[in-house]
Length: 288
Image: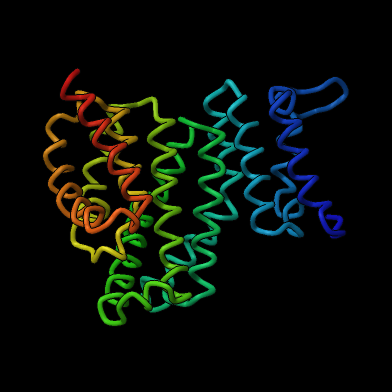
């Protein structure tokens, strides 16, 4: 809670380093205590993070995610995760409810910032917790894809009407930042996933049109290179199980991306790099 410059950053970073070395100590009852320290942290969660900036909250949540991952009992682990995600989930539900009443609310700059912060908080926990994050992903997955789709449509409309300058406007950049966090969260979730059958049957079909189809339909300046890295992660994770979907992935990204990167050798460097990463992963399936 010390607001002197640099102290909070150092405190959060130190908290993470301590947990990295001895995360198990936080989830067991110590001598002279009646409960694991993680329970006390979670009970005072709002108090603990009230003075932190968003990026510091992300580090804090990453740390707690690591602690939860050290809990061996699945039921307790689920309870801890639910308690940890209560504040961002409450905020998320309020934003989604407001959007159902009036979709225009999602266009407000402040709302876009809140959405990005909530998703980044989820990303921080997913990256340190891994597979047990699935229960939280199930909770936000459907609404997250709807938000992604809506922002994508708004971005495409803005760029189509305003040209390349619209792509650099603050509102478009903010909406794209939300899309990028969604894609990064999905990529990390895929990378950490252990239940490949659930990934293939429950998550992948839902991604095909809102993410892959959206990439194909979009104007070049609105295509996110992170879509390519997400599907690279999916291909690497599912390997031969994905053989039926490979033609669909190819159809969505190959021609339109090739057109973007062959006009010259300077534009779209991220797309160029991630496109060949995806091709390498797909070739690995074919050869395998």
